[in-house]
Length: 529
Image 1 (cartoon, one colour):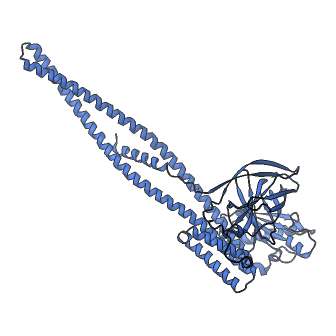
Image 2: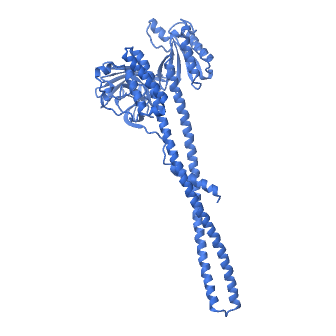
């Protein structure tokens, strides 16, 4: 057997046996609840949300309306009889509404701002079949629900829905960063005076620190910490709640990114440690392979020696028999020598057979190992290919989150299912014209430069107008003006499409000038990769 091929085969076999003990799945908090998934068809449906054992007196009522042309379900929900989230522990600051599909996908639909135990939220989701729950959370940008479920929807009594009662499985937050179930030591009246965004920023930075962001992503962690310090300073000097909230939201964005990157790098460090361990196993396997090869070489040499000895013995036996035939009266000493040679020949034959059996066993073991090695190579290649695809998908997701954060500092951004919408209001354009206003040039430039910095993003530019005779012309002209401007700033025309909605999708149906101006807008719609 070729020595080099033998070593490579045995080495790959040991890699397989060690690789099978390693898992690439990141630990999560799988939460199992029996709830009601509702399929919304067309007309508005009233849905009641009941309190869980955490808050039995809590109650909610939602109106859900399905818009097939827009492929989204609009939700107008009001919740009552809730207490501030910190009563479930100082880890929590706010309440978040979630949509959960029967397949286990969870979407953050937005947070509630309580006033006297009551809160209201208007939002939308692209899903048609989903369950609704409300949870207490550390901040509004969480991506997975906590275990603090305070409300969940009941079965609606309406002919416009299909009800699917089933076990809904979803991956929630593991809770490893939630450790304090006691209310904050700060007096309740002082706690309530603190802006909600500042409370959430404090918790977001704390979570990033627990995720070891100081070591794995120091830049984002320092940015989140500095933004939090600026928000604290602004609050102490009496700045407006709006200014404090704007700075605190920046801190939350940096902290969430620091946590995500830190968890990825921590997982990568664990993988590197596992690779080092496998390298040690590989070295030991190589040493064992060397010893085994030496044994094979020794057995081969012994086999050749046995064959030579047997040939010599046969030759001696023949010569002795010829001599015996020619001289039958030979002395007994020669007969004894002949008997000895017979015994020696039989012993050598037995040794030869034993050696052949050992060699055959070793060859069978090597063949079996080669088969396992080929299987290991195939599985290893598949795992590496899956890992590369996951890393590409995660890079696109981080770029999309960075784009959303960057655009939110320039224009108004609101969530839209699994994406978001950036809104260019009426004052960005010349009054009753399609041209961009000169006073909005700085923000339009910043918007275009931000889009150009993300060359892989795909989006739609939609023009909207109030109810007027030339609504379609105004909406189309303004959408086209924005498209021409961003294209001139370096954004590829293949990255976006331009559409006009005219007056078909008003934000407000009021007749006031402010309401009409609110309907005159251009929306940039981004869908998450």
